[in-house]
Amino acid sequence: MKCLLCKGTLHEERTNYIADLGKCVIVIRDVPALVCDQCGEKSYSYHVSTRIQEIVNQIRGVVSGIAEVTYSDAA
Ligand SMILES: [Zn+2]
Image: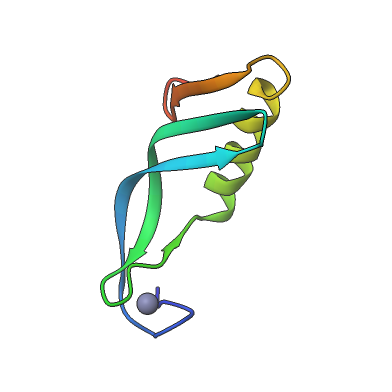
């Protein structure tokens, strides 16, 4: 796969995804992302971004402040 911005090569890397929802911040650790070797742009596969949305939707409303979850642990 190639980077959409610079056509650099993407490699898989575990990153932290941070969702700032105003009232609370959700940190999801160890999210598998595709990172560009050249410009550092991060992208997520369709599967992963869907999963991120599910996790965020589950946690938001329940938590105020900072919530931290690990991607593989989140149900
Ligand atoms: Zn790039």
